[in-house]
Length: 226
Image 1 (cartoon, rainbow, N blue to C red):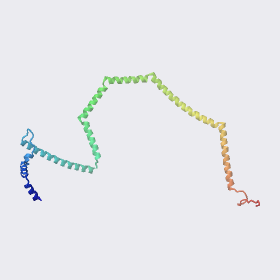
Image 2 (image 1 turned 90 degrees about the vertical axis):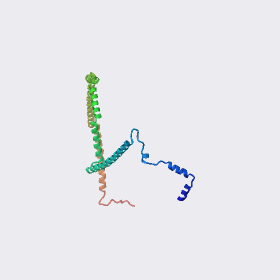
Image 3 (image 1 turned 45 degrees about the vertical axis):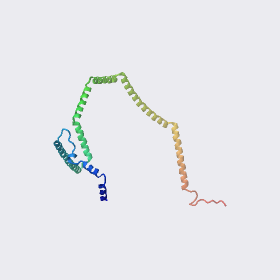
């Protein structure tokens, strides 16, 4: 079938057009594959830069391999020492916070805040406000209304304690008077009498059950005629 297709192609009327198209295709070479040099660079300079770029890329690959080997070795050492990833995170956070504290931005910010605090506390407005508040506090605590209110609250607390104590003593006294009254004593006597009657009736019923009437162990017979 390949020979037939070749014959068809050779006998095709487009045979000349195909050969012309093949001759028009440019040959792929290194010169054609190379991009045009940037403006201001000669071909020699471009070749030198490309060679340097290749060397740098090769060095980067080598450094990555070395770094990966170092990281594996570091992981093995941490595993042997019993260090967990949490310990490493704590160390990193501590180091980061230390770096922040010693950084120029943090130091400048702390100094600036200290300066602002000094300026605020030493300003006339702050000093006048503080003295005004102190004067108001002193005037309030030394005023007659404040003293009267404090005395009133103190007296109210004392009266409340005394009233509660009196209520307790009155209740105790009322209970004592109730127990000593004739009505309460007569009620206690009645309760005692009822209790003694109930206990006596129970004892009598128990004796009747344990000691049967009649002579001997035989129960009494009914002598009535049939």
